[in-house]
Image 1: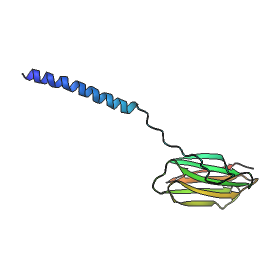
Image 2: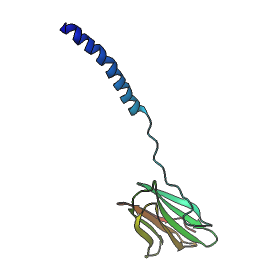
Image 3: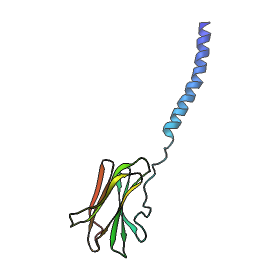
Image 4: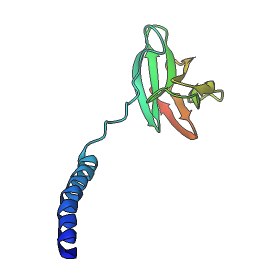
Length: 141
């Protein structure tokens, strides 16, 4: 009798284990949805076009330019909105010493920060959380 009970229990366990293994493999094989990448949404205003960008953990830093005014603009955009997070957008001429900045706890983006730099190279960058990314001597002209 013991042999029959054990045999019945093992015949019931095999299909259950097989189903559990199949579900586990399905979870491992299924591709997770990609994270939502930040995109430039015109935060600098009318007449500005994106001319450069830099990836940063949790978002993207965008440099935009208005050819009519000769002004550059920087915004730091998070991949997804959420609770306020320490963010910083910064911009200066490459030969300058003073950064134009916008910093604080933001849910979506830091900036816009504007700077007249017609005929000059710019340094620009930003921060999300504890990570900084800066580009120097770019977009000259």
